[in-house]
Each structure stands twice: as structure tokens, then as C-alpha cells.
Length: 226
Image 1 (cartoon, rainbow, N blue to C red):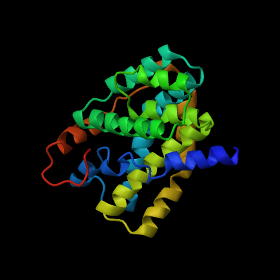
Image 2: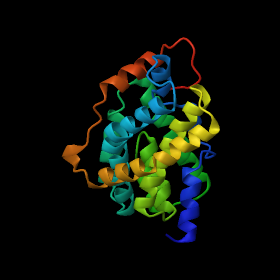
Image 3: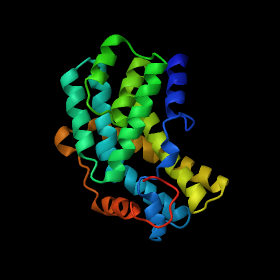
Image 4: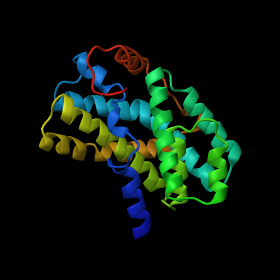
């Protein structure tokens, strides 16, 4: 990868990117409340299971398709996968999360003028912009290779999950970094899954996670918005 593309990827994957990712646990806080995650081992088990059964089988493959759709300037494909992703958010929290972060990233990308007019017209044609759509738009506009953008998204997701555990389990900083390092081969495997799944193999079926998200909506004490 060229240095410029690598730097663009690091900026998109950075936890300091001002899109509010730190505000969300994606059901992990509710899992902690239920005692499902309580130490480094259970945190790794939770993150790995969510990665392979949810993210790698739906969110990441949708991003992969959106990257190709934006690169091809294919409005129909951008619209199709954007609509499917929004429709697959099966709780109010998960839907609000992706719309808020997508809006924030799209707004930031446009203020930074990262894309040409044709790409912008594809984005503006969407009634709602979830996070994968905004991320694909920014990555294509910045000439980040598709494979790198996919890995960047997966790493950013995993890093945020680990940070939630560091803050709330709580885990120590060294434990958190050890956990993140141990996830690297899992992230590579998830990327391979995402790139090679057919449309018919995509699945967002995760009833346990959905129930935790709904329970989190009424959780008495919480730090995160989802």
C-alpha cells in the first residue's frame, strides 16, 4: 500500500475520529451487566464470537459490497446495500447507532472534501446513511484499497470493544493490549470470510445479541448509548 493510502486508512480507523464510536458498546455493556463478560478470557470469548457470527457474516460483507459499489459509481448497488443494512438493524439502539455514526462520518468526509462530485451524488441519493455506507464512501474517495479498508473497519470495531472492556470490566491497560494483539489472526480470518461470502450466505441472525440490546435500552445504570 502506498504511504498516502496507509495514512488515510490510519486516520479512518483511529479512535480519535470524531464520529462518536466511543459512545457505543454494541450490546457488550448489557453482557457485562448479565455477568457474561467479567474478565479477559470471557471478554475475548465474547468479542471473538460476535466478530465471527455477526460482524464477519453481515456488517463486513456489506461494507465490502459498498466499497465495490462506490468504486464502480453504481448507484443501484449503493442504494441496495445501504437499504439492506439499515433494514437489518433489529433494535432501536443499533439503528440509531449506525445512523448517527454514518451521519457524522459523512459530514466529516464532506467537510474535508475527500471525494469527487460523482461519489458525493451517490451518497446524497441515500435517504439515510449508515456507518458502512459512509465508511465506504470515504475510503473510496481517499483511494484506500478495499482489503485495507475492510481490515481497518474490523480492527476499529475490535479496538472499541476492547476499550469498553478496559473501562468497564475493568481490565488493565496491559490486559487490554494483550487481548487486542491476540485478536489479530481472528480479524484476518473475519476479513477473508467477509470477502468470499455470497449474497445468499449473508446473515444477521443473532437473537441473543438483539435481546441484550433491547434490555440495554432500559438498563438502570449505563455508560454507553448501545
